[in-house]
Image (cartoon, rainbow, N blue to C red):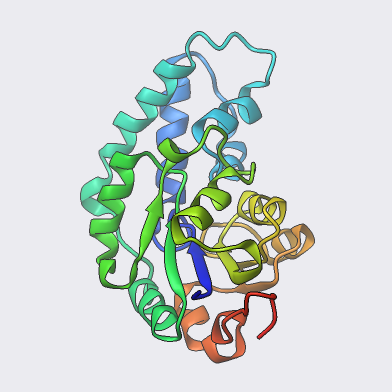
Length: 227
């Protein structure tokens, strides 16, 4: 069974974290909420369900949650024409695939947004499978998304590595017993990512690609978790 590389998309492969921040800020403002932009950015990487709990509190009236999330989706769709992958993102997926990994996109985006992002990424030749928010009941930092991606690949945690850009990616992967390689392109600091338990921290997708031979991705994991 081939080892599996699970890639987050937003902030890891595509430059979208700050677009989501703006869209959430505008959506929340429409319903009378005004959390600081920095707090919103620090919540990106969670699914919408977890994000609203994080920003507004779990004891709030949830009656408008669906409307707020729908507003975010509509506002974010304005940015679709300008979505762009980070330099080297598609080549990274192809290089990892060429080294014998099964490449799976593990995104908590909606199915609609994921289709748009895959078109922008333009690397379907290297991608075996993908997950979206429809595949899980609880989004990151819960482990459900990582486990769903493993299931789609027919892989075990001992055979996998997760690649992400946020604290929530690291925590989600850890809860699923999968090591996490991180990049700084989503706006998190190296200190925060390492403190959360990141196995490696790279500047961006291009830097990870350039250093692939020295990365855990350069040495596919055996079923026992070794090289």
